[in-house]
Amino acid sequence: MRLIIGFLLIGILFINCSNEKKDVKQMEIKKENYGTVDGKAAYLYTLTNKNGMTVKITNYGAIVQSLTVKDKNGVYEDIVLGYDKLESYLEATPYFGAVVGRYGNRIAKGKFTLDGTEYTLATNDGENHLHGGLKAFDKVVWDAKPTASGLKLTYLSPDGEEGYPGNLYITLIYTLTDNNELKIAYEATTDKATPVNLTQHSYFNLSGNCNTDILSHEVWLNADHFTPVDNTLIPTGELHPVEGTALDFRKPTEVGARVNNDEEQIHFGRGYDHNWVLNDVDGSLKLQASVYDKSTGRYMEVLTEEPGMQFYCGNFLDGSNVGKGGKVYNYRTGLCLETQHFPDSPNKPDFPSTILRPGETYTTQTVYRFSVK
Ligand code: BGC
Picture (cartoon, rainbow, N blue to C red):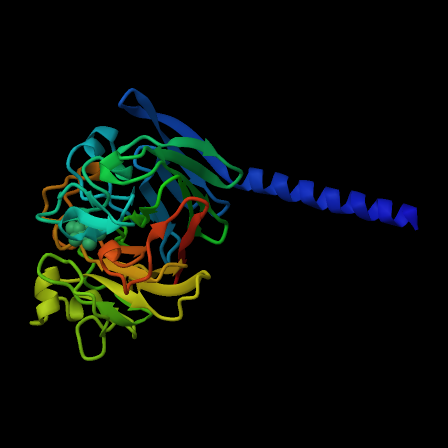
């Protein structure tokens, strides 16, 4: 009997070790120097899975700099907007590929009150606060450590940074799987109550060339409602049915089909720039959105634990950003699917709470999964 148990244990150990080895062998991680910011070294890490899909990530802003995905003919092309050089990311950029926080999206007039104290944040988007402020998580150098199948990034956002209360310690793990998934796992703890709403701000163009706009991409959003906004893109607080509006993506629909409809919400957003209230949210990872590009067959699915999805279709791109390989990013040449809590939640008591308190751990996951149809 002891002998049998002994053999079994050795067997289990052997299986475990060989799995680990397989992981290490299948995932390749290359590290290159990418420059220096604030006296800290920035690197560009290239992760390659066993199929040949690659993702390049820099620890400056936790930015996804490139993502190559194959089309229906097996051709790998880069499907995200970004720059070749670090210097370009240091100039004004519309958050290409970055992780935004401490609060992704807008906070009205840059003010919120928490436990009786009013906090004032930068108003960096007209009269409102956007994506964590002037020098937020997208503009700092994170600490980075490769793992067996990805990259672990950590950042300590000090108490008072960009006006937010509490030291916030964030861990972000990017994983590239052999199922062609880019997974993002976020974790954060604080020593004072603070709003937290982290998201990934990649601009996707599944055509792989970015010469064409994304208007023929077919989008599906699992949402019966959205949060209507005022003309400064701050939610009114209502949840409005998508039924009968240009925001109804319950059936896969081309972005261009209704993006210029004569509807107030479309005027306010200059197209799509809204938060969809996802259905069936229970905190577990759920398939909530997809994008399909007929011309290349590339298909992207978005799984998230978050209650909201900001779908932004590049309405503010105007050709002034010259990206990778000298490519000019014209009007609507990229779309973002930002998984998150609702905009302005710190001022909207009826929205799901974004407040993290000492002793609690913020955790959330999002997966971008790629295939062809
Ligand atoms: C916002 C847009 C904004 C863009 C770039 C998106 O998340 O919804 O309004 O222009 O980020 O800043």
